[in-house]
Length: 278
Image (cartoon, rainbow, N blue to C red):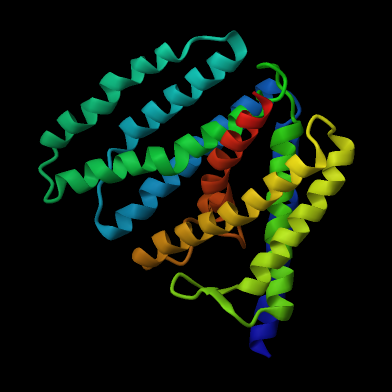
């Protein structure tokens, strides 16, 4: 009985948080400037959360330098889409990247190269995927911003998560990857994929720049690699004995908990759509 009483307020908190955060995310797609500002802040906040999380395992990454480099890299990406700056400007961050090795000389840590390695893991795991997702907004119309692809990506990702949860709760019997996520099932995985494909078919009527088959392929990729992203984040948390990546979202945990599916699937989907559109 006590469990039920506790569970209801938790579900209510999750629903309220999800509602308001979804509104904020949809509002961020309004134009190129709100899109840029929101996902710059979100990517930096997620990177900060990653570095805070891995400190549990005794790792001491170069957080401040890494966040400066991540911010500059994201802004250079934005400048490329807004003003068609060449990728040569990314050379500006190379001295900052190698400065991390020099700074480690003065920290007197027991595991210096572990600190350096995890600093770079943060870039690869968090910053680069958010840059790819951001670039989806400029992919379909020759560097002119369009919310169609980012919005569709989020809708298909949410559809996959929702379908996986509902099918898994009602029909889940065969464990998908019990070592890292005991609750996930094959039934939930295919249910999420089916839900995402159905939503992609509906999206194809509204956004006609891609064929239903291409939208369907995008949904399948999001279902597969979004699930893998969830498992990778679960593996990270289990290796650190952490329940959640953070506590910024009441009832949901941290930003990495909410965007774990995006981190692996966004680069894959970008490459898929880039090859088709170009």
